[in-house]
Each structure stands twice: as structure tokens, then as C-alpha cells.
Length: 133
Image 1 (cartoon, helix red, strand yellow):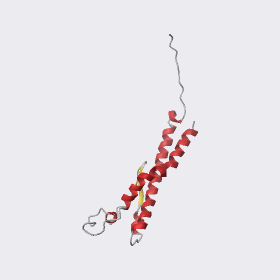
Image 2 (cartoon, one colour; image 1 turned 30 degrees about the vertical axis):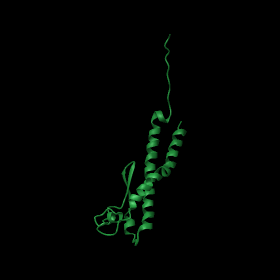
Image 3 (cartoon, rainbow, N blue to C red; image 1 turned 90 degrees about the vertical axis):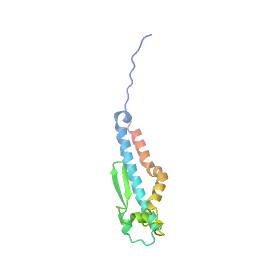
Image 4 (cartoon, helix red, strand yellow; image 1 turned 135 degrees about the vertical axis):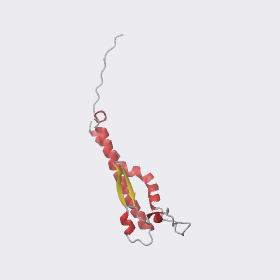
């Protein structure tokens, strides 16, 4: 039996590193899409629950980049934010007000909606990798 040398030549975006760059870019775009969607949901939920909106609290809701793949949606540490959310020291049982739980509700809704919101970015990245061959 003779041993014959065999060689395999690999090429394309998966092997030359372009796919990693494309996937990282898609992940950054997807994180931004989710953060913007979350901010929109917070505003929509506040419009439904606030009894006497003045616009002051809503104007403090913002999106902040934590790192290149993560964003935070918050109320800019508004002093009455914990009370509105229902986690403050002056909520039930101290007073009758239990809070709106806006951020908690939006967080729960995002769990199911994140895939749907980022589907376009993921599909775009897959198409981009396939076209790079």
C-alpha cells in the first residue's frame, strides 16, 4: 500500500475571517434594533398607564450603549423612577400605589419579540456571507 499525499484548499468568508466580521456587524445592528424597539415599547406602555403625564418622566427615557453588543434602556436615574416602577420604598404596603412595572413588562415582552425584531439583521448577515463566496 502506498500512501498518497492529499491536499485540500479552503477558501471563502468562513475561512478568511470575513464571516466573523459580518456576523459581529450583524450582532451590533441587532442589539441596536432591540434597544430601539425596547425604548419604543417603554414609551408606548407609559402612554397607556400614566394617569397624569406631564412629559417629564417620558423625556428621561433613553438608550445608552453599554458596550458594542449591549444597550441599556433606562430613565436616567429619575428620582421618582423606582416609585413609578413599583420598587421604591414608598410603594405598597407603605402606600396603596403598587407601581406600573413598565420596565418589567417591557423586559418580559422583549423575551419573545427579540428574535422577530432581529430576524432581518440575521438574514442580511447570512445573505452577505453567502454572496461573499
